[in-house]
Image 1 (tube, rainbow, N blue to C red):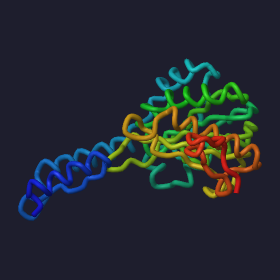
Image 2 (cartoon, rainbow, N blue to C red; image 1 turned 135 degrees about the horizontal axis):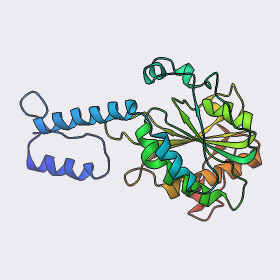
Image 3 (cartoon, rainbow, N blue to C red; image 1 turned 180 degrees about the vertical axis):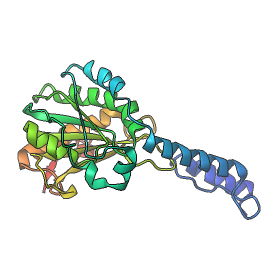
Length: 256
């Protein structure tokens, strides 16, 4: 029976391991009112995360304080949020009047609002700071770029024009009904226009304290950057072996 105390204790223990909505019980033929209201609130939060515009000025100030240069700001061909959602292809192209930076470096960073500007506003600067701390001793780093109404592939235009050896796109991920503020990092070695997702590596679900932490994400990225430079490319041939490093491995990207 759903309301049996033993059954409820069983679900209570499982809920400590996941943010998914499990074992909610019933009130008649429906969910309990509390769970219905929580679901509605989560849906509203996800919608707000998609539509809330990025505060570029505040993010740029936080990024500048990290110390690798004042960020350039670019935009995609999508002129409004509605157009961005209806036309994903526009989000992959730079706006016609946008001047892309030309700053060659081993590693370039693009901070893109993506489908959750909220996630970038909340986690973008501290995540970038961890990446810089991990990578700066070993590579040259370009001043970051902030991209609005952006999809991942917009970074290929930026990275190719600037001359980055490895591109890291930090982007707001699609909100769900459990998490509305998650970031992803897409790593592309030798970026150029026309690449597909098979040419990239993704580190996702970055949203401490419940998701992947900034330090862990930076550690994984560092291993993948090292592996990509050895292999000469990123994508499906490059695997994350950072967990094996904790057991005594090298922590570098595995080449297969």
